[in-house]
Image (cartoon, rainbow, N blue to C red; front, side):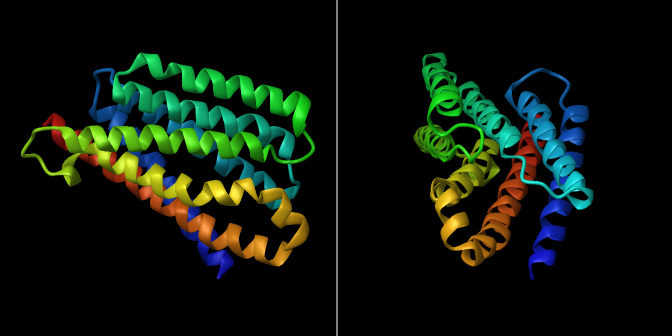
Length: 213
């Protein structure tokens, strides 16, 4: 079952990269989704690169992930701030960055996964996504929410971080105490969340292209 989830997840990631490239070619004017498409391609390419390296040199590189995962979370926060058009919310990623750096250098350190940072980042992403979703519901428009690119983006990140945040918060504990359950959780449930998130991204980009026509 686990190999099947791996193959499906990475196949969806490759399809999402193609969708991002297609979006960048279709939408020439600069706007928030072009920024997101570029950043999300980098996120996925990094992930696939680490997976490929792991096939030949399996190693748990927590030092690298303790930097890249919080950076990814800051990128997502900033994207939602662009969608919300509320620059005052920039305080969220700024304070999170300070917290993540402090956690990396003083509290949890480099050796174990910085679960405090990932949990806080996940919560902030959830808050921003729910604010945007509420903003969509308040819009006086006849357009269906399912045609809104922002709806799919919000849905994807709410489902992913809503269910993955508790896992990342307990990551070190589960890894050390319940290794079999940890493996099952990570390679099935967490991979399933990743698949849903990337399908939501593809749908959002498609909606954005259709809106521009």
